[in-house]
Amino acid sequence: MRFMSIVTSSHPPGPPTPQLLEAVHKLADREIKAGRMLDSGGLMPVSTGAQVRIADGKVSVIDGPFVESKEMIGGYAIFELRDKEEAVALAVEFMQLHKEHMPGWEGTCEVRAYAMPHWDGVCEVDARARA
Amino acid sequence: MTAAEINRTILAVWRIEQPRLVTGLSRLLRDVPLAEDLSQEALVAALEHWPASGLPEKPGAWLMAVAKRRALDHLRRRRMLAEKHDVIARDMAQEQQAMPDPDSALDDDIGDELLRLIFTACHPLLSREARAALALRMICGLTTEEIARAFLVPEATVAQRIVRAKRTLSVSGLAYETPRRDQLSERLGSVLEVVYLIFNEGYTAARGEEWLRPQLCNEALRMGRVLTQIAPQEGEAHGLLALMELNASRTASRTDAAGDPILLMDQNRARWDQLQIRRGMLALSRARELGGGGFYVLQAAIVACHAQARKAEETDWRRIAGLYADLAGLVASPVIELNRAVAVAMAEGPGEGLAIVDRLTHEPALKSYHLLPCVRGDLLQRLGRHEEARAAFEAAAELAGNQREQLLMRRRAAEAGAAMPS
Image: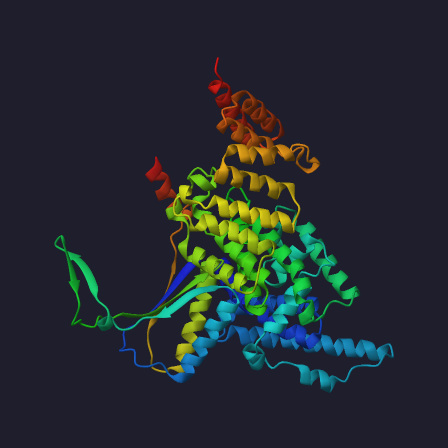
């Protein structure tokens, strides 16, 4: 099963400590070598990007300035794993590193399974669509 | 959390830590199968303690500490036995020195030990089935029961295979063998064969009712990725990974909602997994850089032709036919030749394909292979030789192994019959 882990934080992120960077890098390296991590990346603040919205039936591009929302996505990682338990175990290990190497930081690592055709709930939707 | 959920959580944590446990312990004990046993004992200890105590903050260090204690007990017992039998005992202090402390063992690069682990599990001395079972157990952390369910054999059979394989390794003195770097390419064949066997076992499973069978594909893919990391100079390792990634990219489109197979040319290509295709293409180009033109690299290159064609009509059949010719030059196999015939027919026309197929009709290895008359019938049909096509499809129906294929062949025979001028 494929999972995406998304890290969000409500604090203005601030640069990660060198210790945290090193620890996270080591974990990522291990996961790549184990063939579990397929991709990962960090995201710049929304001020470097844009938002495209639909409201009142109109598409509009918002290019800033942005009111910083409470929860900011800081990064993501994509894993190929056996089950949700493995995804959670890895997220716990990842967050444990934050606790240890960047005291005071608070945030969330959300674990989400990819939607796959023929799998569980998605399979049923597919069957209905064909019927 | 229910007890079952807690157990699943503990198993997940253990599976993530297991390769490091086994590699760290085998370095100390100089015995890979024994190290694997002790890693299982650490799991049992976790299953006993963690439901009450909760998960430790550093589960990896906890498991390593437990396993290390067991390993020391084992070394002590071994020393006492040796003394009792008046055999020269190894110096305990020296053994203590070789002991990895839990933290440093976690930090060390385990590449070489992992290589040893994989090469031990896939030793050519063991049967293919035993290698597959041992690899799934020692590298992927599958339980004996899971392996049995995945391979559709009784659990006792798998347990016996594993016990026998471990014994074979021990008595042959192969329990802690370091493959020399110059032997790597030669020994790698035995490893790749097992990984591909595991992949195909999952890939050819008709339906995913038993989720563990498709799961075998993922375990094989993981092992393939591990191999390209620890043996990055081996073109065939990258080739096999490319082949598996590219084939697996079509998983979602290979069956319809009712579970019936959809043929490659009829699949909805929008459903092919582009992330996986990219990874496959990357592995293939790495294999090519390393000069790869081996068995797996060529097969991956063929699958890549399909993966890159956005529509079925855009498939580069000429290139595929050429790659099959290269493959036939490498391994003489009538099945490869039959595949080449199909590609040639697509590239140059049914007559050219038929000429190859007709040369294969007396091949003893294909005597009861229903796809031979099936391909032949298809080409004859396209040439307008309906009478002969009908006879070929009927012959294919006689040979077809399962009912679904038999019905398909009979239907095609009837179609050919209907197309005959009356």
